[in-house]
Image (cartoon, helix red, strand yellow):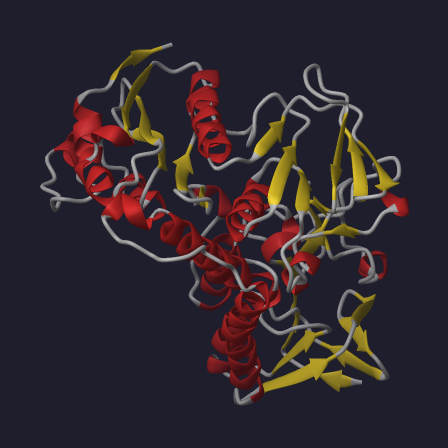
Length: 458
Protein backbone atom coordinates (compact mmCIF):
# COMPACT_ATOMS: atom_id res chain seq x y z
CA UNK A 1 0.00 0.00 0.00
CA UNK A 2 1.25 3.46 -0.98
CA UNK A 3 0.19 6.43 1.14
CA UNK A 4 -0.60 9.86 -0.31
CA UNK A 5 -2.14 13.05 1.03
CA UNK A 6 -4.72 13.03 -1.78
CA UNK A 7 -5.87 10.84 -4.65
CA UNK A 8 -7.49 12.29 -7.78
CA UNK A 9 -9.35 9.89 -10.05
CA UNK A 10 -9.56 11.33 -13.56
CA UNK A 11 -7.53 13.83 -15.60
CA UNK A 12 -10.40 15.90 -16.97
CA UNK A 13 -10.86 19.62 -16.49
CA UNK A 14 -10.95 19.61 -12.68
CA UNK A 15 -8.29 17.00 -11.88
CA UNK A 16 -5.01 18.45 -13.22
CA UNK A 17 -5.41 22.00 -11.83
CA UNK A 18 -6.48 20.53 -8.48
CA UNK A 19 -3.31 18.42 -8.48
CA UNK A 20 -1.36 21.61 -9.10
CA UNK A 21 -2.95 23.41 -6.16
CA UNK A 22 -2.57 20.48 -3.78
CA UNK A 23 1.07 19.78 -4.65
CA UNK A 24 1.76 23.50 -4.49
CA UNK A 25 0.49 23.39 -0.91
CA UNK A 26 3.02 20.67 -0.11
CA UNK A 27 0.79 17.62 -0.45
CA UNK A 28 1.68 14.36 -2.15
CA UNK A 29 -0.88 13.51 -4.83
CA UNK A 30 -1.65 10.40 -6.88
CA UNK A 31 -3.55 11.14 -10.08
CA UNK A 32 -5.11 8.13 -11.82
CA UNK A 33 -6.32 8.22 -15.43
CA UNK A 34 -7.55 5.11 -17.23
CA UNK A 35 -8.03 6.55 -20.71
CA UNK A 36 -7.03 9.83 -22.35
CA UNK A 37 -5.59 12.80 -20.49
CA UNK A 38 -7.65 15.95 -20.77
CA UNK A 39 -11.05 14.31 -20.42
CA UNK A 40 -14.07 14.85 -22.64
CA UNK A 41 -13.33 18.47 -23.54
CA UNK A 42 -9.92 17.85 -25.04
CA UNK A 43 -10.59 14.46 -26.63
CA UNK A 44 -14.22 14.10 -27.70
CA UNK A 45 -15.90 17.38 -26.74
CA UNK A 46 -15.06 21.04 -27.13
CA UNK A 47 -11.67 20.83 -28.82
CA UNK A 48 -12.41 18.43 -31.71
CA UNK A 49 -16.03 19.42 -32.27
CA UNK A 50 -15.37 23.16 -32.37
CA UNK A 51 -12.52 22.44 -34.78
CA UNK A 52 -15.00 20.59 -37.01
CA UNK A 53 -17.47 23.46 -36.67
CA UNK A 54 -14.75 25.88 -37.83
CA UNK A 55 -14.06 23.77 -40.93
CA UNK A 56 -17.79 23.59 -41.63
CA UNK A 57 -18.05 27.38 -41.31
CA UNK A 58 -15.23 27.80 -43.84
CA UNK A 59 -17.12 25.62 -46.33
CA UNK A 60 -20.35 27.51 -45.69
CA UNK A 61 -18.70 30.90 -46.13
CA UNK A 62 -17.00 29.75 -49.32
CA UNK A 63 -20.38 28.82 -50.77
CA UNK A 64 -21.67 32.29 -49.84
CA UNK A 65 -18.64 34.07 -51.31
CA UNK A 66 -20.68 35.81 -54.03
CA UNK A 67 -22.81 37.44 -51.32
CA UNK A 68 -19.67 39.38 -50.41
CA UNK A 69 -18.57 40.12 -53.96
CA UNK A 70 -15.99 37.35 -53.98
CA UNK A 71 -15.88 34.95 -56.93
CA UNK A 72 -14.65 31.38 -56.41
CA UNK A 73 -14.40 29.39 -59.61
CA UNK A 74 -15.64 25.81 -59.52
CA UNK A 75 -17.53 23.79 -56.95
CA UNK A 76 -16.71 23.89 -53.24
CA UNK A 77 -15.44 20.47 -52.20
CA UNK A 78 -14.86 19.19 -48.66
CA UNK A 79 -11.97 16.80 -48.02
CA UNK A 80 -13.28 15.05 -44.93
CA UNK A 81 -10.05 13.18 -44.35
CA UNK A 82 -8.22 16.52 -44.20
CA UNK A 83 -10.90 17.93 -41.90
CA UNK A 84 -10.42 14.98 -39.54
CA UNK A 85 -6.63 15.30 -39.72
CA UNK A 86 -6.90 18.97 -38.78
CA UNK A 87 -9.05 18.16 -35.75
CA UNK A 88 -6.66 15.39 -34.69
CA UNK A 89 -3.74 17.81 -35.01
CA UNK A 90 -5.47 20.26 -32.68
CA UNK A 91 -6.38 17.60 -30.11
CA UNK A 92 -3.03 15.81 -29.90
CA UNK A 93 -0.89 18.64 -28.43
CA UNK A 94 -3.61 19.56 -25.95
CA UNK A 95 -3.79 15.99 -24.67
CA UNK A 96 -0.03 15.62 -24.60
CA UNK A 97 0.35 18.95 -22.83
CA UNK A 98 -1.92 17.88 -19.97
CA UNK A 99 -0.05 14.60 -19.49
CA UNK A 100 3.35 16.28 -19.72
CA UNK A 101 2.33 18.87 -17.12
CA UNK A 102 1.14 16.22 -14.68
CA UNK A 103 4.10 13.90 -15.09
CA UNK A 104 6.48 16.79 -14.55
CA UNK A 105 4.63 18.14 -11.51
CA UNK A 106 6.70 17.82 -8.29
CA UNK A 107 4.81 15.83 -5.70
CA UNK A 108 2.41 14.28 -8.21
CA UNK A 109 2.52 10.56 -9.06
CA UNK A 110 0.67 9.70 -12.28
CA UNK A 111 -0.80 6.22 -12.71
CA UNK A 112 -2.38 5.06 -15.97
CA UNK A 113 -5.03 2.51 -15.07
CA UNK A 114 -8.52 1.81 -13.77
CA UNK A 115 -9.15 2.98 -10.20
CA UNK A 116 -11.55 0.96 -8.04
CA UNK A 117 -12.45 1.80 -4.45
CA UNK A 118 -11.52 -0.75 -1.81
CA UNK A 119 -12.70 1.36 1.14
CA UNK A 120 -13.45 5.03 1.88
CA UNK A 121 -9.71 5.74 1.95
CA UNK A 122 -8.27 3.11 -0.40
CA UNK A 123 -8.19 2.75 -4.18
CA UNK A 124 -6.81 -0.16 -6.18
CA UNK A 125 -5.10 0.52 -9.53
CA UNK A 126 -4.02 -2.75 -11.09
CA UNK A 127 -1.82 -4.46 -8.52
CA UNK A 128 -1.28 -1.32 -6.45
CA UNK A 129 -3.38 -0.13 -3.53
CA UNK A 130 -3.28 3.61 -2.85
CA UNK A 131 -4.43 5.20 0.38
CA UNK A 132 -5.25 8.83 1.19
CA UNK A 133 -7.47 10.78 3.61
CA UNK A 134 -8.75 12.87 0.69
CA UNK A 135 -10.09 11.43 -2.56
CA UNK A 136 -11.47 13.49 -5.45
CA UNK A 137 -13.54 11.75 -8.13
CA UNK A 138 -13.35 13.43 -11.55
CA UNK A 139 -14.30 10.63 -13.93
CA UNK A 140 -16.56 12.54 -16.35
CA UNK A 141 -19.24 10.95 -18.50
CA UNK A 142 -20.01 9.35 -21.83
CA UNK A 143 -22.78 9.27 -24.38
CA UNK A 144 -26.00 7.71 -23.20
CA UNK A 145 -27.44 4.94 -25.36
CA UNK A 146 -31.22 5.00 -24.99
CA UNK A 147 -33.14 1.71 -24.88
CA UNK A 148 -34.71 2.29 -28.29
CA UNK A 149 -36.18 -0.77 -29.97
CA UNK A 150 -33.66 -2.08 -32.49
CA UNK A 151 -30.70 -0.11 -31.15
CA UNK A 152 -28.75 -3.36 -30.81
CA UNK A 153 -29.41 -4.26 -34.46
CA UNK A 154 -27.71 -1.29 -36.11
CA UNK A 155 -24.31 0.40 -36.15
CA UNK A 156 -24.83 3.78 -34.57
CA UNK A 157 -22.54 6.73 -33.96
CA UNK A 158 -22.15 8.77 -30.78
CA UNK A 159 -20.35 12.05 -30.12
CA UNK A 160 -17.04 10.19 -29.85
CA UNK A 161 -17.17 7.71 -32.73
CA UNK A 162 -18.46 10.29 -35.22
CA UNK A 163 -15.12 12.07 -34.85
CA UNK A 164 -13.44 9.11 -36.54
CA UNK A 165 -15.33 9.60 -39.82
CA UNK A 166 -13.05 10.50 -42.72
CA UNK A 167 -15.82 10.39 -45.31
CA UNK A 168 -19.01 12.44 -45.40
CA UNK A 169 -22.11 10.26 -44.87
CA UNK A 170 -24.66 10.35 -47.66
CA UNK A 171 -27.51 10.91 -45.18
CA UNK A 172 -26.93 11.42 -41.46
CA UNK A 173 -29.95 10.95 -39.20
CA UNK A 174 -29.46 12.61 -35.81
CA UNK A 175 -31.61 11.31 -32.97
CA UNK A 176 -31.75 14.11 -30.40
CA UNK A 177 -32.40 17.80 -30.98
CA UNK A 178 -30.22 19.34 -28.32
CA UNK A 179 -26.70 20.78 -28.06
CA UNK A 180 -24.45 17.96 -29.30
CA UNK A 181 -26.89 16.81 -31.96
CA UNK A 182 -27.51 20.24 -33.45
CA UNK A 183 -23.84 21.25 -33.62
CA UNK A 184 -22.86 18.06 -35.43
CA UNK A 185 -25.98 18.07 -37.62
CA UNK A 186 -25.21 21.54 -38.99
CA UNK A 187 -21.51 20.76 -39.41
CA UNK A 188 -22.13 17.61 -41.45
CA UNK A 189 -24.79 19.35 -43.50
CA UNK A 190 -22.18 21.97 -44.40
CA UNK A 191 -19.73 19.20 -45.22
CA UNK A 192 -22.25 17.99 -47.80
CA UNK A 193 -24.37 15.32 -46.12
CA UNK A 194 -28.14 15.22 -46.23
CA UNK A 195 -29.23 15.58 -42.58
CA UNK A 196 -32.43 14.81 -40.68
CA UNK A 197 -32.87 15.64 -37.00
CA UNK A 198 -35.36 13.55 -35.00
CA UNK A 199 -36.58 14.99 -31.68
CA UNK A 200 -39.29 13.64 -29.39
CA UNK A 201 -40.31 17.05 -28.00
CA UNK A 202 -42.37 19.56 -30.03
CA UNK A 203 -39.37 21.88 -30.38
CA UNK A 204 -35.60 21.58 -30.63
CA UNK A 205 -33.68 22.41 -27.44
CA UNK A 206 -36.86 22.13 -25.36
CA UNK A 207 -35.27 23.81 -22.31
CA UNK A 208 -35.14 27.10 -24.22
CA UNK A 209 -38.06 29.48 -24.70
CA UNK A 210 -40.16 28.76 -27.78
CA UNK A 211 -39.05 31.93 -29.58
CA UNK A 212 -35.41 30.91 -29.28
CA UNK A 213 -36.12 27.31 -30.30
CA UNK A 214 -38.19 28.47 -33.27
CA UNK A 215 -35.41 30.78 -34.45
CA UNK A 216 -32.91 27.92 -34.27
CA UNK A 217 -35.26 25.70 -36.26
CA UNK A 218 -35.52 28.39 -38.94
CA UNK A 219 -31.73 28.61 -39.15
CA UNK A 220 -31.34 24.86 -39.61
CA UNK A 221 -34.21 24.51 -42.06
CA UNK A 222 -32.71 27.36 -44.05
CA UNK A 223 -29.62 25.24 -44.62
CA UNK A 224 -31.65 22.29 -45.85
CA UNK A 225 -31.75 20.25 -42.66
CA UNK A 226 -34.96 18.23 -42.29
CA UNK A 227 -36.59 18.38 -38.84
CA UNK A 228 -38.88 15.72 -37.42
CA UNK A 229 -40.06 17.08 -34.07
CA UNK A 230 -42.76 15.57 -31.84
CA UNK A 231 -41.42 12.17 -32.89
CA UNK A 232 -42.93 9.39 -30.78
CA UNK A 233 -42.02 5.72 -30.43
CA UNK A 234 -38.62 6.11 -32.10
CA UNK A 235 -37.09 2.80 -33.16
CA UNK A 236 -34.18 1.65 -35.31
CA UNK A 237 -33.79 -1.13 -37.85
CA UNK A 238 -31.32 -2.20 -40.55
CA UNK A 239 -32.10 -0.79 -44.00
CA UNK A 240 -30.64 -1.28 -47.48
CA UNK A 241 -29.39 2.32 -47.32
CA UNK A 242 -27.92 1.80 -43.86
CA UNK A 243 -30.42 2.38 -41.07
CA UNK A 244 -34.13 3.03 -40.79
CA UNK A 245 -35.35 5.38 -38.06
CA UNK A 246 -39.06 4.95 -37.38
CA UNK A 247 -40.47 8.18 -35.99
CA UNK A 248 -44.30 7.93 -36.17
CA UNK A 249 -44.73 11.70 -36.23
CA UNK A 250 -48.11 13.37 -36.58
CA UNK A 251 -47.00 14.68 -39.98
CA UNK A 252 -44.65 13.36 -42.63
CA UNK A 253 -43.42 9.90 -43.47
CA UNK A 254 -43.31 7.46 -40.54
CA UNK A 255 -39.75 6.37 -41.35
CA UNK A 256 -36.48 8.09 -42.26
CA UNK A 257 -33.81 6.04 -44.05
CA UNK A 258 -30.24 7.18 -43.61
CA UNK A 259 -26.75 5.89 -44.30
CA UNK A 260 -25.64 6.59 -40.71
CA UNK A 261 -27.41 7.43 -37.46
CA UNK A 262 -26.02 9.56 -34.63
CA UNK A 263 -27.45 9.07 -31.13
CA UNK A 264 -27.27 12.38 -29.29
CA UNK A 265 -29.74 12.01 -26.45
CA UNK A 266 -27.72 12.92 -23.39
CA UNK A 267 -24.85 11.80 -21.20
CA UNK A 268 -24.32 9.30 -18.41
CA UNK A 269 -21.62 9.42 -15.69
CA UNK A 270 -18.64 7.05 -15.67
CA UNK A 271 -19.43 5.84 -12.17
CA UNK A 272 -20.75 2.31 -12.66
CA UNK A 273 -17.40 0.51 -12.34
CA UNK A 274 -15.60 2.50 -9.61
CA UNK A 275 -16.64 0.29 -6.71
CA UNK A 276 -18.42 3.23 -5.08
CA UNK A 277 -20.47 0.84 -2.96
CA UNK A 278 -17.30 -0.31 -1.17
CA UNK A 279 -16.65 3.26 -0.11
CA UNK A 280 -20.30 3.89 0.72
CA UNK A 281 -20.56 6.77 -1.78
CA UNK A 282 -24.17 7.52 -2.68
CA UNK A 283 -25.43 8.03 -6.23
CA UNK A 284 -28.79 9.01 -7.65
CA UNK A 285 -31.02 6.91 -9.90
CA UNK A 286 -29.01 7.91 -13.00
CA UNK A 287 -25.64 7.10 -11.46
CA UNK A 288 -24.54 10.66 -10.71
CA UNK A 289 -22.62 10.98 -7.45
CA UNK A 290 -24.64 12.86 -4.85
CA UNK A 291 -22.81 15.93 -3.54
CA UNK A 292 -23.65 18.82 -1.25
CA UNK A 293 -23.23 22.51 -2.02
CA UNK A 294 -19.46 22.23 -1.49
CA UNK A 295 -19.12 19.16 -3.75
CA UNK A 296 -18.56 16.81 -0.81
CA UNK A 297 -20.14 13.36 -1.02
CA UNK A 298 -21.93 11.66 1.85
CA UNK A 299 -18.59 10.07 2.85
CA UNK A 300 -16.21 12.41 4.75
CA UNK A 301 -13.00 12.96 2.80
CA UNK A 302 -14.46 12.15 -0.64
CA UNK A 303 -15.50 14.80 -3.18
CA UNK A 304 -16.92 14.51 -6.70
CA UNK A 305 -16.06 17.09 -9.37
CA UNK A 306 -17.14 17.64 -12.95
CA UNK A 307 -19.70 15.85 -15.07
CA UNK A 308 -20.00 12.85 -12.74
CA UNK A 309 -21.72 14.87 -9.99
CA UNK A 310 -24.74 16.06 -11.99
CA UNK A 311 -24.18 19.69 -11.02
CA UNK A 312 -23.09 20.84 -14.45
CA UNK A 313 -22.09 19.27 -17.75
CA UNK A 314 -19.67 21.80 -19.16
CA UNK A 315 -15.94 22.36 -19.17
CA UNK A 316 -16.34 25.68 -17.39
CA UNK A 317 -18.49 24.21 -14.61
CA UNK A 318 -16.01 21.37 -14.14
CA UNK A 319 -13.17 23.86 -13.81
CA UNK A 320 -15.26 25.91 -11.40
CA UNK A 321 -15.78 22.75 -9.33
CA UNK A 322 -11.99 22.59 -8.95
CA UNK A 323 -11.91 26.25 -7.92
CA UNK A 324 -14.60 25.69 -5.29
CA UNK A 325 -12.98 22.58 -3.83
CA UNK A 326 -9.48 24.10 -3.78
CA UNK A 327 -10.61 27.38 -2.24
CA UNK A 328 -12.56 25.66 0.51
CA UNK A 329 -9.82 23.16 1.32
CA UNK A 330 -6.74 25.36 0.99
CA UNK A 331 -7.87 28.96 1.39
CA UNK A 332 -10.38 28.66 4.20
CA UNK A 333 -13.16 29.86 1.88
CA UNK A 334 -16.82 28.88 1.93
CA UNK A 335 -17.60 28.79 -1.78
CA UNK A 336 -20.72 26.97 -2.92
CA UNK A 337 -22.08 25.56 -6.15
CA UNK A 338 -25.40 27.33 -5.60
CA UNK A 339 -23.63 30.67 -6.03
CA UNK A 340 -22.83 29.78 -9.64
CA UNK A 341 -24.98 31.44 -12.28
CA UNK A 342 -25.53 28.90 -15.08
CA UNK A 343 -24.19 29.95 -18.47
CA UNK A 344 -23.52 27.97 -21.62
CA UNK A 345 -23.45 28.15 -25.40
CA UNK A 346 -24.82 26.19 -28.33
CA UNK A 347 -22.20 26.22 -31.07
CA UNK A 348 -24.32 26.11 -34.15
CA UNK A 349 -23.72 29.03 -36.53
CA UNK A 350 -24.76 31.57 -35.50
CA UNK A 351 -24.17 30.52 -31.89
CA UNK A 352 -26.48 30.82 -28.91
CA UNK A 353 -25.08 32.33 -25.73
CA UNK A 354 -27.28 31.75 -22.67
CA UNK A 355 -27.05 32.84 -19.03
CA UNK A 356 -29.45 32.48 -16.10
CA UNK A 357 -33.15 31.81 -16.41
CA UNK A 358 -35.27 31.52 -19.51
CA UNK A 359 -38.43 33.61 -19.60
CA UNK A 360 -40.48 30.51 -18.80
CA UNK A 361 -38.30 29.71 -15.78
CA UNK A 362 -38.46 33.29 -14.54
CA UNK A 363 -42.24 33.40 -14.93
CA UNK A 364 -42.53 30.21 -12.87
CA UNK A 365 -41.02 32.04 -9.89
CA UNK A 366 -44.09 34.27 -9.73
CA UNK A 367 -42.14 37.54 -9.70
CA UNK A 368 -43.07 40.47 -11.96
CA UNK A 369 -40.89 40.55 -15.06
CA UNK A 370 -39.46 42.92 -17.60
CA UNK A 371 -38.60 41.42 -20.99
CA UNK A 372 -36.80 42.94 -23.93
CA UNK A 373 -35.72 41.54 -27.28
CA UNK A 374 -34.29 42.64 -30.59
CA UNK A 375 -33.84 40.74 -33.86
CA UNK A 376 -30.31 40.53 -35.22
CA UNK A 377 -31.62 42.20 -38.38
CA UNK A 378 -31.47 45.43 -36.31
CA UNK A 379 -27.87 44.96 -35.20
CA UNK A 380 -25.37 46.90 -37.32
CA UNK A 381 -22.52 44.45 -36.85
CA UNK A 382 -24.70 41.55 -37.99
CA UNK A 383 -25.86 43.50 -41.06
CA UNK A 384 -22.29 44.46 -41.98
CA UNK A 385 -21.12 40.86 -41.67
CA UNK A 386 -24.09 39.59 -43.67
CA UNK A 387 -25.17 37.33 -40.81
CA UNK A 388 -28.50 38.61 -39.53
CA UNK A 389 -30.15 35.42 -38.26
CA UNK A 390 -31.34 35.19 -34.67
CA UNK A 391 -32.28 37.53 -31.85
CA UNK A 392 -31.22 38.74 -28.42
CA UNK A 393 -33.46 38.60 -25.37
CA UNK A 394 -33.14 39.73 -21.75
CA UNK A 395 -35.37 38.98 -18.73
CA UNK A 396 -35.23 41.03 -15.51
CA UNK A 397 -36.99 41.31 -12.16
CA UNK A 398 -39.33 44.32 -12.37
CA UNK A 399 -38.96 45.09 -8.64
CA UNK A 400 -35.23 44.67 -8.02
CA UNK A 401 -34.34 45.48 -11.65
CA UNK A 402 -31.68 42.78 -11.56
CA UNK A 403 -31.18 40.74 -14.72
CA UNK A 404 -32.46 37.18 -14.33
CA UNK A 405 -31.34 35.76 -17.65
CA UNK A 406 -30.47 36.44 -21.26
CA UNK A 407 -30.04 34.70 -24.59
CA UNK A 408 -28.12 35.99 -27.59
CA UNK A 409 -28.69 33.88 -30.68
CA UNK A 410 -26.66 35.48 -33.41
CA UNK A 411 -23.22 36.30 -34.72
CA UNK A 412 -20.85 36.64 -31.77
CA UNK A 413 -23.57 35.64 -29.32
CA UNK A 414 -21.26 33.28 -27.41
CA UNK A 415 -18.90 36.19 -26.70
CA UNK A 416 -21.41 39.04 -26.30
CA UNK A 417 -23.31 37.15 -23.59
CA UNK A 418 -20.38 37.61 -21.21
CA UNK A 419 -21.30 41.22 -20.61
CA UNK A 420 -24.56 39.98 -19.11
CA UNK A 421 -22.75 37.19 -17.24
CA UNK A 422 -20.47 39.76 -15.59
CA UNK A 423 -23.32 42.11 -14.65
CA UNK A 424 -25.33 39.26 -13.13
CA UNK A 425 -22.36 38.08 -11.08
CA UNK A 426 -21.85 41.66 -9.86
CA UNK A 427 -25.58 41.86 -8.98
CA UNK A 428 -25.76 45.12 -10.89
CA UNK A 429 -29.14 46.42 -12.00
CA UNK A 430 -30.16 46.85 -15.58
CA UNK A 431 -30.02 50.63 -15.01
CA UNK A 432 -26.27 50.38 -14.35
CA UNK A 433 -25.82 48.38 -17.54
CA UNK A 434 -27.88 50.89 -19.53
CA UNK A 435 -25.41 53.65 -18.68
CA UNK A 436 -22.50 51.74 -20.20
CA UNK A 437 -20.92 53.16 -23.38
CA UNK A 438 -20.06 50.10 -25.48
CA UNK A 439 -17.91 50.02 -28.59
CA UNK A 440 -19.49 50.48 -32.02
CA UNK A 441 -19.99 48.48 -34.16
CA UNK A 442 -20.39 45.37 -32.00
CA UNK A 443 -23.13 42.98 -31.03
CA UNK A 444 -22.63 43.87 -27.35
CA UNK A 445 -23.51 47.53 -27.95
CA UNK A 446 -27.17 46.59 -28.47
CA UNK A 447 -27.60 45.03 -25.03
CA UNK A 448 -28.01 48.41 -23.24
CA UNK A 449 -30.49 49.35 -25.98
CA UNK A 450 -32.52 46.20 -25.32
CA UNK A 451 -32.49 46.99 -21.60
CA UNK A 452 -33.86 50.46 -22.31
CA UNK A 453 -36.77 48.97 -24.27
CA UNK A 454 -37.86 46.33 -21.76
CA UNK A 455 -41.58 45.94 -21.13
CA UNK A 456 -43.63 44.25 -18.38
CA UNK A 457 -44.42 40.61 -19.12
CA UNK A 458 -46.53 37.95 -17.50
